[in-house]
Image 1 (cartoon, rainbow, N blue to C red):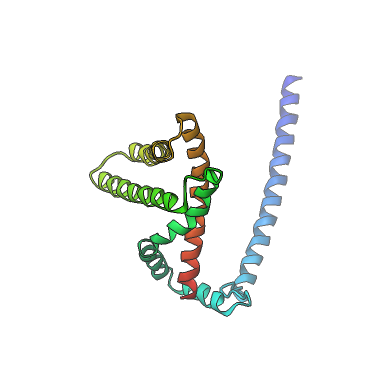
Image 2 (cartoon, rainbow, N blue to C red):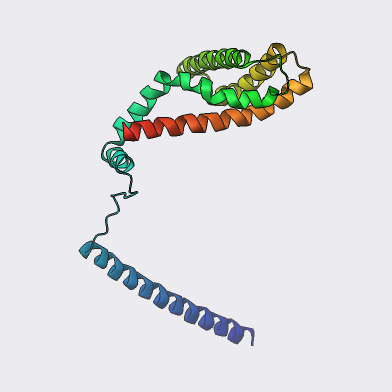
Length: 194
């Protein structure tokens, strides 16, 4: 009796497998016919039409020579890095607008020192990577050293307590992310339209 039950299961399994194979074969035939249709009638989606000629022209230039556009973007980063100062000023001001003893000049000096430190840190990390320092160490340094620097700089420049400096550094980290995104968007727009 057990052998008949096994035989019935084997027959059912075979029938299911034959049915699955037939379905897969039908799908393959559908895919073959779709591939033939695409070869006969290719679809191109290379042209952008935003209605703004300068942007359309920039997108077309980007598509024609992406390597040149990336090179232009890289060369623009250091040329226009001064733009980070006016972009950052309103965000830093938001952290201290009720403290009247700190003027925009104080915030500008803070930003300039921060940018100088980050530039030097980037150079050191780049050189360390060339010397073979493991990327895990460099990534950790790239994340924690800027935060520690900003916290200490906030504490000293604005005469804050540690807890207040840490909280403001956390908020400032989000502000820095917004500033960097704005900066990159401006550079991309300049590269595409200029």
